[in-house]
Amino acid sequence: MRVRVTTDVDMILASPGADPTLDGRTWTFEVTDVRDVAVVLAPDFEVTTADAGGIPIRVYTRPGGLAADVVATQAARAIGREGDRLGVPYPWSAFTVAETAGGYGMEAPGLIWIPRGTASANLPYLVHHETAHQWFYGLVGNDQQAEPFADEAAADLLARTVLGGLRGSRCERAPLDRSIVAYSQGCYYEIVYIQGGNVLDDLREAMGTDRFWTALHDYVEAHRDGLGGTRQLLETLRAASPVDLLPTLQARFPDLYGGA
Image (cartoon, rainbow, N blue to C red):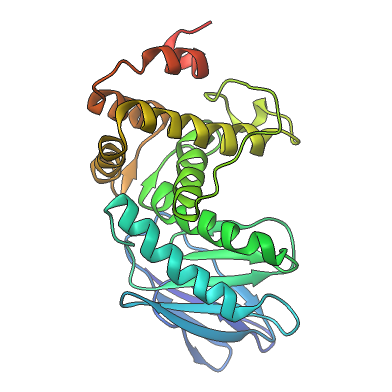
């Protein structure tokens, strides 16, 4: 896909894929094998570059904003470590990180954005989490509203595993097979991301680390450039497990597995 963006004032474009080219006020770039395309524009972006095993990284920051060298270092680490952990290399030819004015961290194939003002202590985690979405939902898609567990829990486990940062949830235990709108704003993250990642880690411990990560690799490859989901992910783990995972799944996924 070739994308052209024309602005009415001078801007700098942060895009996924190859380094964008500028002709007057028209930016052009190309991307392949993506399920959606996102861009970020600012009049005063500064670009810092890095490399992750041959994958060029571009970090777009604004004066007085994010520490570009820290973001670039964390992005390179995330691309390498997460790909190695899954056994699935980063799937695109380049990676872009763009600073945004506020809101939340977010992802798109080949590009993530990190809010200005992100605390320095939280920066490694946020970069790793959003980078993990390059695999879960970028490479393996899912219905992100109806089944947030499939991408958010998997991405959070991947990020926290390579960072060594698993933690307990600050909210009461709740089912993990609900849509986004079924959770309160205050506990959505704590349930789907934290509890979801911890349940996946419990399954890893039950079935064995090597079997778990091999199964997750197989799930990614089986649904590469297509759609997966919560049941497909969990059934892949069940099929690879030497122990019965059903009691755990019934307790945490009652709609999917008929639990109480």
